[in-house]
Length: 135
Figure 1 (cartoon, helix red, strand yellow):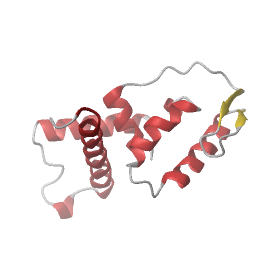
Figure 2: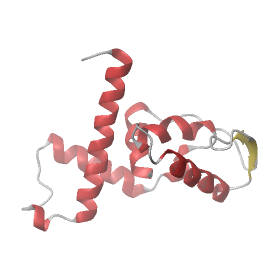
Figure 3: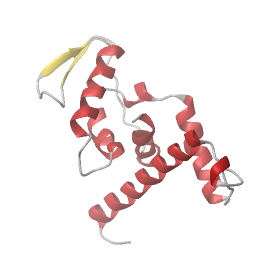
């Protein structure tokens, strides 16, 4: 989930979010104003958003990219492995470096993450086409 949305944030940029705990924002799930006391409350809300939009026609990264800034600082999901994985994906693709000698030897964690990144980049391309027309 975090990797999906960070593909979008790394592509379009990160929003400014200046709220300090506790703060009040409208919940994207219940549409009611609620108080977010700490990061635990925010992460719980993100889980609820994930559950609500799991079967959406849009990718999870796209959904989270547009929804998270409405109620939280999306950087709360960030972990250093996410940035490293996105950089590795870009290097691997731009330099045409294989991730392993064979698919059988490929690390399943890397393969899964690269597939997530690829899916989100395709979703970004679809979004760009729908927004600006064919390129």
